[in-house]
Length: 259
Image (cartoon, rainbow, N blue to C red; front, side, top):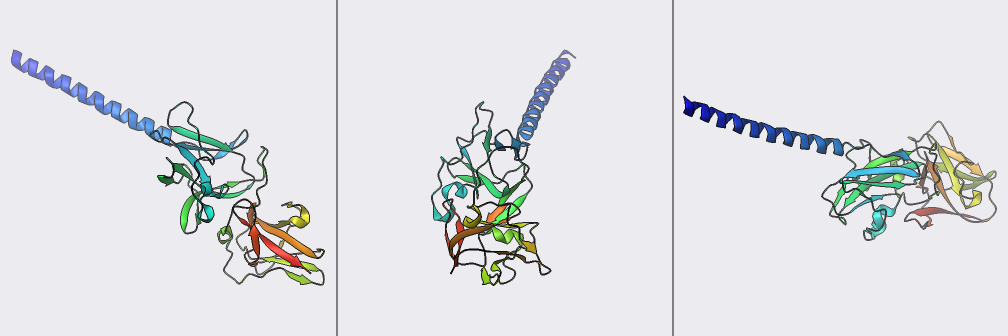
């Protein structure tokens, strides 16, 4: 009987050890899950805060169509000095605050110098650029922080608003001025901004006609002008005008010549 008791005691002790180990493993897994469930990008003091949990990473940067995709847009090389994220307490959660102007942006997190490019696991909103799916954020005009207007970096984003389904037209000089026509049937608002109005994205709204085309006529003196459409807050070159020039932000501005 004594041997049975001893053997039973050893089994009980082993069971306790195994149960404790399983409980600890479960707690660790739960903790990792909680850490992975970070908030999606949201407004904080100074800009939009992005967060990503990567405890084994040595470096995490933020790349998107607001910073030339970390320097790679247009065939450039990845630059790890562009928008590096910070993990000051070493808990594996990397953050950065970016003062993005109102608009629609795609982004990814870049791990360890470009070893991995990851979507945001805490943001269900997606967009596609160049056939590649990315995380997406829409920054509303109501943000309260200060920001610098960026008129470029979004090449080809017109597809997101339905452009390209019909043959777009370049601006046309009429008796009333220069008529601009934009084919963005999925957009809620379209404005015209350029050198002729100080790049103000709010003073020249276009009107949507029955065919879903956005139209507006502007009186312009003879000269050469750079311009863009501002579609739901996103700066986009004119898809109907092949004449463009570098905008200094990795994107292009459309060019109009009035004779």
